[in-house]
Image (cartoon, rainbow, N blue to C red; front, side, top):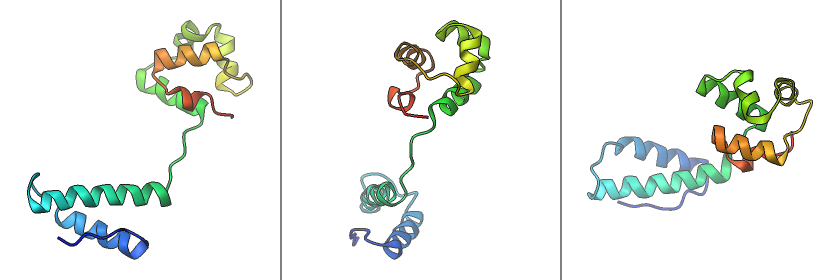
Length: 118
C-alpha cells in the first residue's frame, strides 16, 4: 500500500481508480485501511476543488415541503397567514428571525441555510 497526497487531477483520477478496485475490501485489513485513507483523501480533494454551496433558502423550504407532503396551508400553520407564506415562497417577503426559528424546528432545515440572502 503506497498512499500519497492528491495534488492534481491526475492524482485524483488514480485515487478514484484505486478506490474502485478495492471498494469491497473488508475493514481492518490492509486493503480496508487503504480504502478508508483513500476515501478521506478523495473527500478532502473534492471539498477543496469542487465545493458545493448551500441551497437557496426558499428552494430548501419548497424541497422540504415536498419531501414532507406539505402544502402552503400547512406551512401557514407554522409561519402565519397563507398570504404571508405565498409572499415568502415567491420571494416578495423576507424570512423573519421568528419564521427562521419555526422553520428550523418544524422542517429541520439548518438555520445557516435559512439566514442566507436571497
